[in-house]
Image (tube, rainbow, N blue to C red; front, side, top):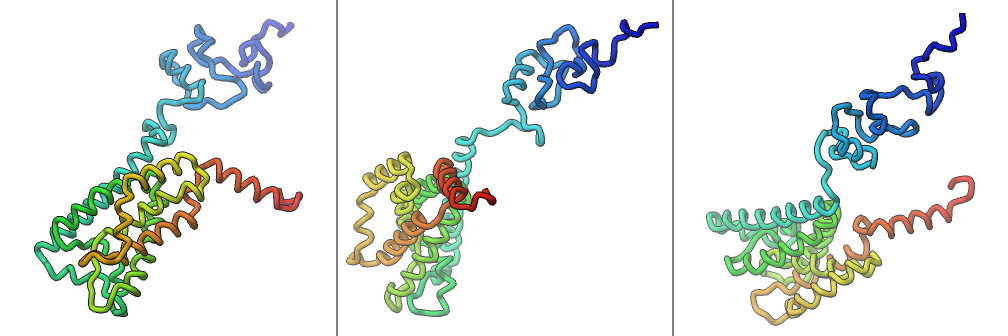
Length: 279
């Protein structure tokens, strides 16, 4: 007896093992327009009870939920803003908590930089957290939070790399030239370092948007340039100057803040220099 009328498991469009036409339909069969493409994997698991809008969203490659965690995806800029805000908030919280502790324990201010005192070298890491009085900490809080946000907007790694350059270079410069018998405290070295980095990074990253940001910041905070010069009693111009130098070097050296197009161009150049057999 002929078996021509027998319908194979692939619902009549060829054997199931064949590509494309042999792909079994998925229920509900009354809506073939809901079927997933035969030659590509679905973006998210098929849900026969999903609405047409949800099915269309899956076909367009824009799932509403992350497959691995089941959570909504966070847009890149929103994540960058969140990172910047968290780092700026962390900066403010840290210096203000330390300042409150100073009010209770005034001797904490001794943990500043004491120039040419070898035993105080590790204190270059605690000096930026200390402030002499309320006016001192307020003057560093507002610009510090703004610059911390803008640096942190490029990512945590960028923020910590820049901050490390500023703290170490600014601290060592102050330790060398700060004047014997003086005590240097305050986050102003960080403020100057972050600002210097923000002003010059665009020129090394070849980023028009970063150059514009730097020019705007340089214009609005041009008055801070006087803090780089000696002459004001009680102001650590050495911390300002060497902090700014640290920020400049960070903008010149680090590559974690490079925009994607610059990274792609650098990788393409590196591949072109490789022997043909290794590309």
